[in-house]
Length: 195
Image (tube, rainbow, N blue to C red):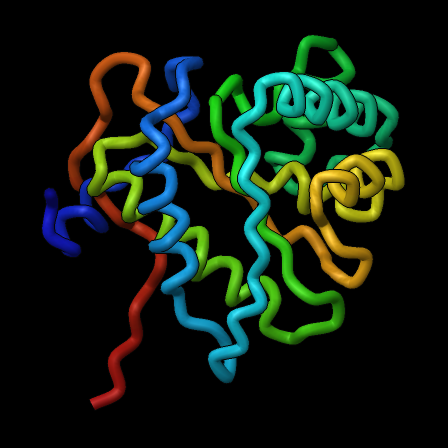
C-alpha cells in the first residue's frame, strides 16, 4: 500500500469507473478513513449514506436530472452548476457518472463546521481510495439540490435526517482502464509565509 504522502500527491479525481462493485472490504476501509477525519470540537456528526444498490442509484439519478432540468440559473452561477443544469436539460444526465458506489455526506443544519467537517471526511476517503487502488471523485450535485423537495424526500427515505443538510458526495469504484496518477503541477493555492 502507498504511504500517506504518495497517496496524497498521486490522487486524481476520476469519473470513469467499471459498473461492478469493488470488494466490500475496500468500501468499508474507505468509509473508516472518512470516519477517522477530524471534526470541530471532535463532534463526529458527519453522516455518511452509502448507496451501492443500482436501482436506488438509477432512481436518484432520474430525480436529480428532473430537478436540474427544471432549474433556471443565470450566467453568474458556478461553472459546474451551469454544466449540470445544461446536461440535465439535454436529457440522459447521470450525476454520479455511473459509478457503482455513492457516498452522500450530511451534517447538522446550522452547525458552523458542517461543510468543513464533511470536507475532511471526503478528503480522507479520496486519499484512502487512491491508496487502495480505487477511483473516486467528489461531487456536489446533491449539495446544490439540498433544498429541492423531491431530492430531499428521496434522500430522507434513504436515511437523511430532517435536521441534516447535504454537504457533499463521493463516487467510488474500480478504475475503467489504467488509473491516472502523477503529481499535478500546482499554480494556484498561494502560500504566504510570515517569518
